[in-house]
Image (cartoon, rainbow, N blue to C red; front, side, top):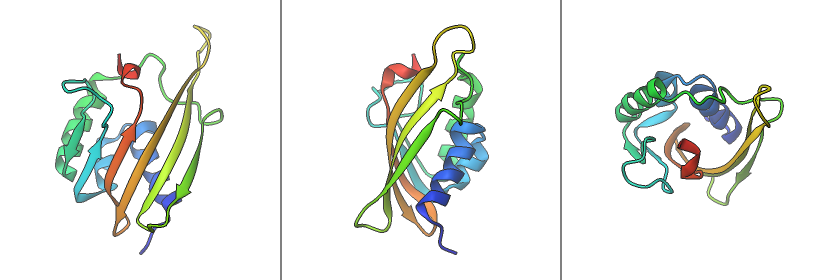
Length: 137
């Protein structure tokens, strides 16, 4: 069954950033899938490059266990995204603005990023996640 970019993106976003479920996140990838954050320096807390579903599962579970931002989960009513298809039917781009509520402790924080998805057989074969490294400090 073929899945649309919208369906693939939503399942990825729900599994990872929204629920922080490393098992579900890993299942959105092909067995040899690659998750990259090319703007991160070597040795950053967030994994810079993960290869294979099992490494994605293991490393993201470890990341989720140690990293829970004080900002908590995104406010879905304030956040938004736009998906852009390309001339290659296996590639789409997500342009994302994620808003974290200040919760009375300060103003809302907006995190903007771009993700490039390469799909194979309805799963993510390669995801390049472009965000500002200082967001993980």
